[in-house]
Image 1 (tube, rainbow over the protein chains, first blue to last red):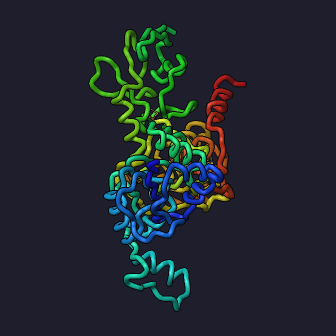
Image 2: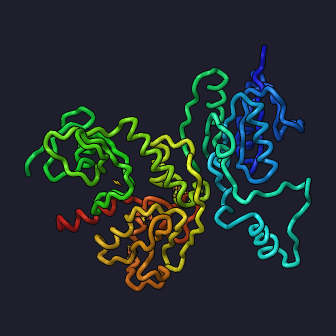
Length: 177
Length: 235
Ligand code: SF4
Ligand code: SF4
Ligand code: SF4
Ligand code: FES
């Protein structure tokens, strides 16, 4: 049987949406019969593969690594789902937006409210560089489906996955928060 | 009171001559989304969520602020109105900082509920992310400007029901902000009687009781109408 190639991506979020996915408990075993998990924070795969059928994206775009990865995600996935409020609206990840640009945020966090002798983190090529504003993923790439919630509950994620596997339009009951 | 006959979404309805389209619709069991309207307060027509189409008028009219007339033909749920309503709710979300996941009103908020009703899957506009303050100088209540939609329900509840007028709006456009007295911290606004009517009237997490945390703020805005009715009818 040709199993659907599923990827899950963790951008600027708390991993709660992935926890919610794992909350599906034994249904994950049923799911495994229908999908092949080709990329995920819970799978050992370093680069985003080609030819993905469905990608669930948790988290907002908060740094240069996210910005790059989300382009690969779009190019290589047939369908992209924004999973959870951070991906859909920026949510808690975007709480820093009113406070100004990245430099001033780092200054406030690491120096003013941290250790006065602290330093601003700077490890080029290792720690990604923060963007000045955190943005929802649909501001960068076209998104096929929005599943709001912080996090969306396991049953809601399951309902969407079941519909997509069956090829029917998913019911997106529920809202933000 | 003379009666008027009109149609709403093709259904024949009779209403009293001084009623608004919103009142007539509600009596006929037709719901129209609202935000700045609150039973018991005067109408300001500020939010535009209740816009309806009236045959013969090129302009959309706010149902809360339009009186019924004889033979009026009203449409409340056309694709055009639905598109406008969704856009209005998106703009409200884009204008201030609404982070439902960490908001006192989550689960009990009229704006959050409206987003579901109008099918707002996401916000297509750029977020303004303004730097808004939170005033917790009052002993019992606080105001978080991040969540305020400028509906003026608090202004009207304080002015018309409590008879005080502690609240008003200063500034214009995106710089408009609620103020207490002559723009002093709420705790220093000597006109405030601490009655809590603004808290009852607020549809969002903007005005909150101190000490309430995420999703804890439950209140019953219909109590404003009850107070007004009790007064008018001398219960
Ligand atoms: S006021 Fe309502 S819409 Fe705004 S963050 Fe709070 S719950 Fe969400
Ligand atoms: S507590 Fe009462 S008097 Fe004070 S601002 Fe609110 S409505 Fe006005
Ligand atoms: S504080 Fe609440 S009631 Fe007052 S204008 Fe803002 S949203 Fe409306
Ligand atoms: S409810 Fe009619 S304009 Fe706000």
